[in-house]
Length: 178
Length: 331
Image 1 (spheres, rainbow over the protein chains, first blue to last red):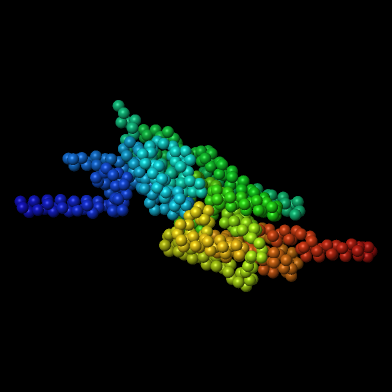
Image 2 (cartoon, chains in turn orange, blue):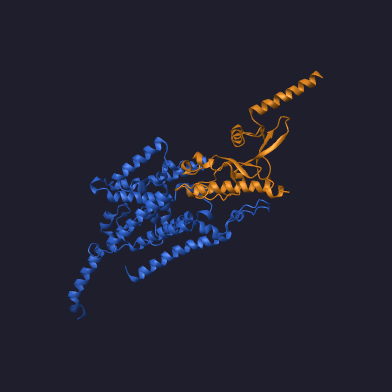
């Protein structure tokens, strides 16, 4: 009996330590980004599924998990997309209503990236953006002159990745209506 | 220029444009199309936008394509007409439009892209592809025309050269110049080796100054490098293009295939007028050094100058003598 209690305690301890250190299957740097996209989330699933995505969960007081939204790398959702110097890696968060919870620009090789996609205001303008918006440079997205190839590729990546994720992972709003 | 030669050149210009179209049209047919998404109830207002039609893509890029085409037409008209005035118009347009406004350049980054399968995707970037195709095709047909009047940085240094007084300039001694031209091949080889070994293209700001058009240079080292280069460019004309540019080196290699070469007279074996006039150090006695020639037209204008080119002077004298001897010869 004592042994069993000890084992449960050990399991709980290991579990909480692994939670504190980082979640199984998610690198700490990625986990950090996921938390920035879903500050309310308590846990994240490892990257899984087709197309590959992370799932953000919120746990209520009783510990029941509800899905808050999904996060995914644009390069895995739309692998054919490339800018001037190659793929632009971005992590996109999407809630269940098709609203983008945030965009984090990761690795890229764009020569003109520093004054276009690396500017904080680039990623910021996608927060709370509806995937049904047009995503047109110079219209609902600010254009940056001299970096058209980079900017248009990044915007296409975000839009098409989010829409692909929505089609496969989310329930369309129409279907939810009575 | 004879009417026939002019016709040939016009035909070639048409050929160039048509070849661009020939590259474009099949690409339309085989262009990547993303797999249509499974039908859902999302009802994106522009769901068809995910797979835009060619008409949509062309409409979105029509202004860019028209402007780039207009610039290229200007560049090639100035080239075929051997017009100095049009050449300077082209150079100013290259700096202002391709450089400052669009920053549309062919770069070592694109060579890395070609090697790594990372070129920009085709359909949304037609203007860049038009420029790239024209660059390659024109280099094979005529030589480094791109370097001489399309590249914004090359145009910039040529304009600097045009406004800086001659007495400030240092003419690189011939022997040194002939050796220094190899530096750019070293830089090309080094940059390619670095990329192939590390798979990291981020070497480009250190080998190309074009990025100044986007104010990309952030680190003190890069700013110091650009500053040094720009100051040195005042005193050594086209320093970067002649000795350092890795892309120019690659186009130089390609220009060995040049189909339509600059003609030489038999008199060129002894005459040195063009060699002295060539600001690119691309003439060595009777020989045009193709890899260094950017088709600036300086020597070709001299060939047609009946008052300066010995070919014409000798012909005129011969005609003169024949005219005087005429009756005796026919008698």
